[in-house]
Amino acid sequence: SNEFGEFESGIMAAIFGATTAVVIGGIGTLVTVGVIAIIWPQVRNLREIRLEPEDVEVVGEREMARAL
Image (tube, rainbow, N blue to C red):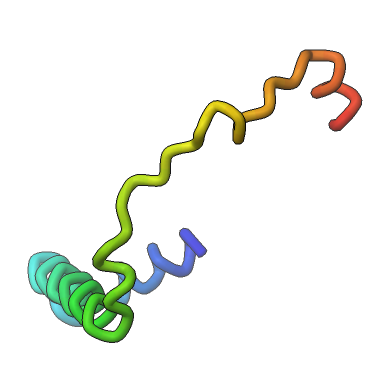
C-alpha cells in the first residue's frame, strides 16, 4: 500500500514533474473530499468519536500476556 503510493507518486513526478504532480495530487484530494461530502452528507455531520469510561476496559499485564 505505501509502496504502491510511492510508486504512483514517482510515476506522476516522472511524467509531469514534481511540482505539477504535487498540485495534481492536492487537487485530487480536494475533489475526492468534495465528492464524498456530496454523495454521503452524513459524513459531513461526523464529529470526534469519544469513548465513554465504561467503554474502555483496563487489562492487566498478565491478561495482556495471555492474550498474546
